[in-house]
Length: 128
Image 1 (cartoon, rainbow, N blue to C red):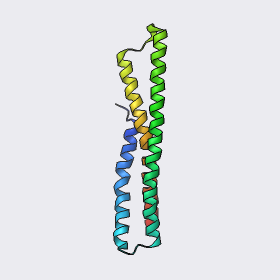
Image 2: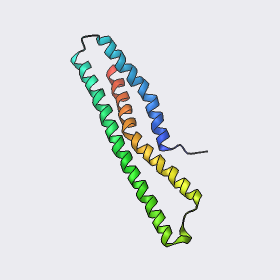
Image 3: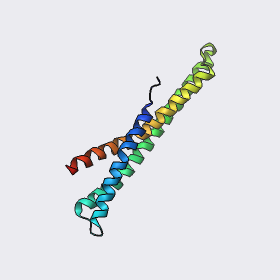
Image 4: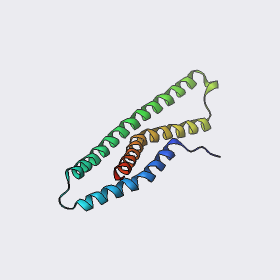
């Protein structure tokens, strides 16, 4: 049995929660019509702020993860240059590259998954 990657779990969280959040917000905005209440306007502004915040946090996290992957690859290449008998095989390079890609994607998805899941819980509580 294969282990699911962390980014797959995050994508599943987003895919599960996002339709509920979108439907709730669109219904609220449609019911408000041309005269939204102060609560509706705050929800709209919150939605816009959350999207920008998650995008910026995700891009910073991904750039940090790219830098870590670069440093790790450089260190591995340099340590192999000094001790060629400990140089990883090409298959090991592929595995390390895939793991680095997974860490980069997971770092970028974390703020989005966290925000969407929190909105799902918050909007579900508000209805009751």
